[in-house]
Image 1 (tube, helix red, strand yellow):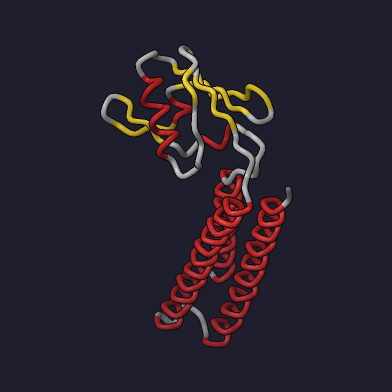
Image 2 (image 1 turned 90 degrees about the vertical axis):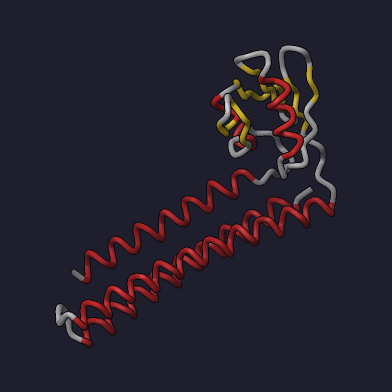
Length: 185
């Protein structure tokens, strides 16, 4: 039972790290990439959907993203959604297609993005700590039900704490890499 709990907790902590990696990939570093617009939502017949479900998102060049809507009337809605997103992008309508140039990052914008990255990291750390708390609670419940001994509980809590420390360290490492990437000119 304890081994299963540790394994499940470790898998969930790894998922938290994977989510953090995906979130950090969305924070732009000056180069254009299509994943940048993945979390921008557009209203499509009454429901909110990601841009890549209503348009083709391509790279026009290293500093420009091209967005071609599948339905002509959607172009204006997509343009508005990109403008209103927290990415600080200003698309230009070319008739059939939107061009989204990536402005050079200013020092102030880099610092703002660093704050966003730190917030994402803190969210991941909270998720990992919550998983530790849940696992420890399950261990306490097992001791109450006399399924495991108190000594086993202590050892398992120590193991879960080691897992927690490992994954928090991984979050810190990812944050340091992303901050370094952001501050490069």
